[in-house]
Length: 229
Image: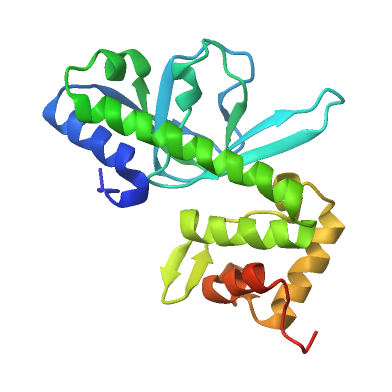
């Protein structure tokens, strides 16, 4: 297993270290594209480390509308809500062929090594802060700014960094972006076109989305794109 150690993924790093020392045991599983890791309401007492591929978590509103909660790439850990709830409060679906390491939560909670539990607590606290920021964005930002904030976050989380840009190799559709932003697919297309004209995002020859982190961050802070628009 390749290391994922960095400040943003300390839980993944500590899990790998514990597995290497034999203090916990994980099961490596492969999930096909569009297959579910687990479903809403399903009992599941595991957390998952993404080794390769990509997973999205989603839920549905009372009227059946799908809401995409998050996207996870290599080195990300998801499913931590199993610490608090016996049944899943969301569905996890592979966006492509994905390899996961499945670890039972009980192993972590019963482990005598404090760093593992501390890493899990830190991970859950970070996830809580992330969700608080999403709520704040919904309340204080229009949909164009929410898309910009989402792209910056995705670029940092699943993008391949190149200087001040982040390349998202995995396909994320406009419909999926719309579900995360809370707007329509047509509006997402319009905003992406504006961002492209402003030079803050562009498509590569292979149609991958390249995000200019510094420029998009500046847009979020100054609330304006280039005057050329």
